[in-house]
Structures are given as structure tokens and as C-alpha cells.
View (cartoon, rainbow, N blue to C red):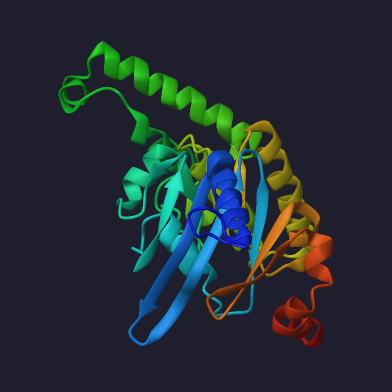
Length: 279
């Protein structure tokens, strides 16, 4: 049955549902499209991430997951669609401005400043919020000294939360792989983010390190009141920490739901989980 303006009941329902998602979502994207040459890497992607929610983004290799992260964080511009963060339109903004608004990420390939020590890596993240100016820095004014001392204190305290305080003078590149992952997450959080995007944080980790990472992800979500979007191939981790899961295949969303719903979804089993069992 059509409404007075010609909209069907189904269209009215979808419009209402979209409005509700947008109203309560901290990060909302819809209709995202990205092509590289003749390849459509992301096709009509959408997601809504609410405050203090942890969502997993899964799919086979080449499904478009990292491209989605690049679109959300400004490393790539969408060909179509829009992205809103805290109800502000951010698609088209450069990556540093999106980060400054409170959306941070890690990378599949660790991107620490490996020739700097652990403490310096975290302090650099805090520096995007400095209030002193170049003149203050050159003249070492009182405002500069006080703010730098505060950044130092906060950075040391922050490293303590991740069990890295004793390693603060070590070069970042000299840390074991698992600790480098922790440091990358710590650095991302030091940007004072509200939303954290984790791109395969368990990649290369052994089972013990992965279990520790699961505990860390749960703890930082709780203690920092964060919303987290997680790309991960370790299905045990995804099923144990995520509240909802979105499944991509060939750039398109093929399923959304709770871990129990995704675990038994025929399309997901065919596209992804079944392949994982065959390995």
C-alpha cells in the first residue's frame, strides 16, 4: 500500500530504520562505492557503529575489508556514498583531520616509528592535540614546558596500562612482535580517539598472544568507553569479542548479525567460514 507521497510501506520502514540508525550511530556510512580501474572493490557498503559497540568486519581475502577501512579513515575517497562521524560528514576530509576528530586506526602491517623509542611513539600521538604554538616551542616558554611535561606524564601512565612502561626507552623496532602490536594500539588510543579501527591485530600472533589480545580489546573498550570496528581472520577471536558482525564478499555485504547468527548463516558458510574449515 502506498502512502500519501507515493512511498510504499516497505520504503517508509527502510527510511525510518535508516533515520534511527543515523540518529544513534557514532560512525555511520552508507552507499559506499570504490573502484580501482575496472575492479569494484567496495560496492554499496554501509555500517552503523554505536557508542561502546564492538563490530567485526570479516570476509575472504580480497573482499574489500581494508579498502573499507581506508575509506572510513580518509586514506581513500569514495566514488559514491557518505560517511558521518558523530553526525558530521567526513568523507572527503584528509586522514589527519578525521584522526583529529577522534577516529583512529591500526594497520595490518605494523607502522610504528621503529627508530624512535616506545615513549616517543606515544608522545607523537598526543602531539596532535597540543595547544602551544611554534613560537612557544622555539622559545621554550612556560606554556610549552608545562604541556610537554603533561604529555610525558600521560604517555608514561598510558604505557603502564599496556604493560609497556618498563620498555619505554627501548626502540620500538626492537620489541617482540606481540608488544609491537600492543604499542600500535596504545599509540592509536593516545590520539584520544572515540572510535578505534583495528586491522587484523592478531595477524602473526601465536595462540597465547591472541588470547592476551582478546583480553586487551575487551578491557580497552570497557575502560576507554570506545567503539571498535575490527577486521580479523581469527574466527575464535571474532566470535568471542564482537557483539555484531558484518560479512563482506567481493566488496558487498552478504550478512549482518550476532556471532550466533553469522555462524549459522548459509551464505557466510559458503563464502567464508566453509573455506576456513577446509584449511
